[in-house]
Image 1: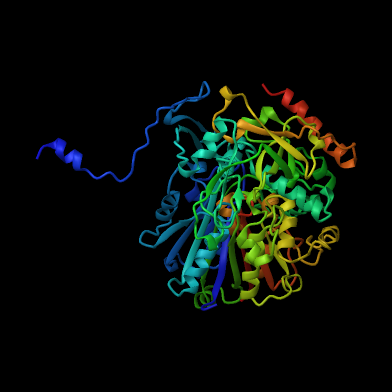
Image 2: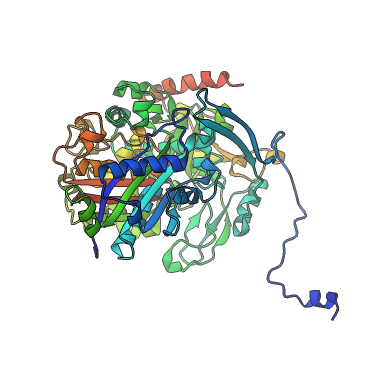
Length: 416
Length: 221
């Protein structure tokens, strides 16, 4: 890396759906920045020299360029700004853009604000809005919503890897139960209960093999993270800043059915990859991030992760794409609860998309913030207890994921 | 110089298509209202106000080079495309080849057989608002003919728990007058000689998951 990129602070609003989340987007953004300033009082709004806004769908707000409303509300007129949009990987892509801005030397202090207000329309309409990111000419009318596409991919993946419904249900229960230690998490604030694998198995069918508790939450939420140069990090948060040591962004087809033998993938990973079952873009983005961060054995060298659990099945598929397990041991990896808090590599201690929530543009930023909290010792302050703190964490991974695996980013964060 | 002469000399950059065949199949009750604030609510303590905005818009989707595929649906035909350089064939179609070495080679149209094979499948028990009454829906990704890719569509004419990986399918079109040049003009059905395999624990599990969906759909108005 030409110039070190650091993270010094960040915060989210509580994630909600419906009546309890009534704040405006600029009000939410303000709350996040004020909380960050409490954590790092040396940070002044005057320090920001670039703002990147992370927002997925104008359909939810019915306001084009809503970032302009937030930007001047924050008093940042004159500071350059632009919006990044990349489906479910909008947050990861915005972080990528912010890191590039600092790495290049063009900017020193970059604020990233992400948000989505998915409760502005009915839940079934919201599902349809998200599905507008599928190819509407071929897929919207026959599937209608993303869980169906994901279920078709997961069904074959589970067969090919000897993974059962119960195996993936452990992930649905894990992330929701982790969220019960996180006061900003939507699951904590709304349903507010611990659940078992049996509860997941008994929840209503969404699309076989995915049930309701295998699915993430639709949310309203805003998130802010501060990305900067090492010089600035040492000035405002000398003892607890975090560095982005590796990052990778990759892409795959919009329609999952086009992946059976895509020539570009055959060149990289051999014929028949990623097929309809693997997240090739996740593997490719991991290859890039691991190389940059000098990671050879991710399972041993990474302590935890905040990853894109849109569905419990996709979290399991991501483990494999990240090389945490392969087709020979992925089922056992799940049965060993390797990614639970007591496991070898806890995943989504913050609750993830199934527990914390998934306000699309804010999601990758939320994952970044949770990862930052773990590495900077802030978990006991931000969560309700130390139960969801990864002890002595030195290195974490962030994963952000769009479409049916159409755009995926991975970041390696380490203590500064 | 008269105005007529100027018009005559105006350079034409493209031939404008003439649309003689026009058809509307807009369902009753679909209106364009434009942008209207239609109501509000205020919390009892006066601290929070929500306002309701309604907006509908008619879009024109210009299919351009893809037009033959969608026009084919009206005629009960599935058209694919094929790269004359590398031979790769696709449904859904690609109007230019995906092989970087073919340098965006324009592809040729090929008529596809009305048969396919299941690549993977799922059984939807929930969907977008417009599909709720049709639940449960068996959705398959299937490969048509020698296509290099799979296309998603519904599988009809089967108990949901009987769908299988690799099963042979036929493509069935709606009656001509009901077609709207969209992919739902056709669906898959099991091939004529196909017979379901005996019940097994997975099929029993799926049956158990699907049965409440049938009950729930009955309650929908």
